Every structure is written in C-alpha cells, then in structure tokens.
Picture 1 (spheres, rainbow, N blue to C red):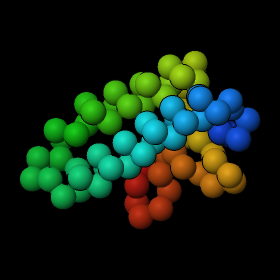
Picture 2: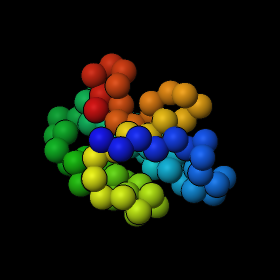
Picture 3: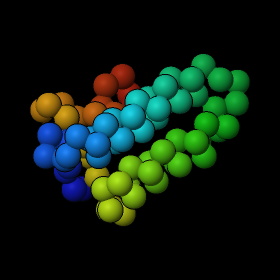
Length: 79
C-alpha cells in the first residue's frame, strides 16, 4: 500500500484531496444511518476515483495529513 503525505502536495491539490476525503466521511456517516446503505456506494467510489485522478495513482493507498492518517479511515471502524 502506497502512502501519500499531503504536507508534500501543493496547496490546491491538498485542498482538493481533503475536500474529497471530507465528502467520503460524510457519506460514510450517512450510510450508517440509512435504511438503504448501498445507495451511497457509487457516490463514495466516485470520490475515491477523483482522489486517484488527482494523485495519478491507481493502486491501494493511504493518505496522511499533519502526521495523521485521514484515508482510509482507521477510527470508529471506518475504512
């Protein structure tokens, strides 16, 4: 699994990636409360795809920001 450190990205790319991670977190939280959790799967996968395009990387990865892993999610059972 490749590790990306957002502190090494330029400000615009760092913002774009953090925005997508935040949207994934919100969707994941809503998914847990939904009577039809699968309806969020495509949305989440699109966000991951956007992150992959920004980073130009197609394999498995994790993202660190200020020393913390922000994706995949490691707290509270999130992945």
